[in-house]
Length: 240
Length: 153
Image (cartoon, rainbow over all chains, first blue to last red; front, side):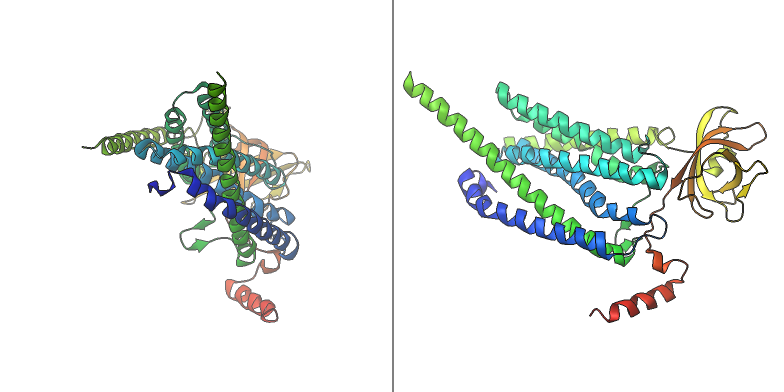
């Protein structure tokens, strides 16, 4: 586990994995969206707006997946003091926020023609908005902790605390009556016709690869930042 | 016990407490956090007459009728166990508003037991079905899907 404690080994791996994930993700996502936007028939009731599904669902899953990654990395950091885990948690925050915001925006665009409203304060929509706010708070906290030289344990504890929202988002449509529909895809069963399921699954894989690539790129940038900082400090000491 | 194990136990205890607190809060919220009343809930514990609430359920097939003034529509919202609430609404119906599909009505309960809606939201269910397969039995749909994909392989 501590094999990657030395960022050199991580950087060697990340330097070829990052472009691979990003390129693969972009190709798969473009293919899935082309398939979904032009090749599948419209939905029985929703018509053409069903195509938003191919962006909304993967970004929603990854928005939640991002915080799950923050929580797991924070746990590893708090218990095993693995330095790279804190970097990983910070790397997952920005793409997680962007995906959560895309999910909220596409959901709103879909809601207008389908439900007849841009926004309602039901359980699913509200808890997803809370997730976006949690991301913003986490990013601000992690940046402030670094700038002020405070322990990275504080954002890590916040990352674990915020994880309670993830099962709430997931279960909100089951626990409470909501305008948002209940899950279409449950263990081994899908209420989405196979014709829509194909592009959806490819889009999920494509967006996930992009997500992974962005996390690695963010981690490399954060590590480079730390190295540059250390080098500047050393030079300043030598100059004295 | 090594410090690492101590930290692990501490974090796990904290997580258990956190999840417990979250579940308790979600349980306590279960009614308040619901976006609407189901018809059976509205009949069992009706809200006060005139209080702004929402009613959600299925538009009963065959119940939709336009009144003489041409604007007001009446229909019945049904839920489980034969529960049904009559609804009256004057305004523009959402595109997806059809009999046999889900609806959330915002409004208030009138003294005669009718729900007077100010606004209707169409509620979509979890099913996604392409237009071509609409109205077919599952068997027919499967056959047609087979036929249309035969040439592609």
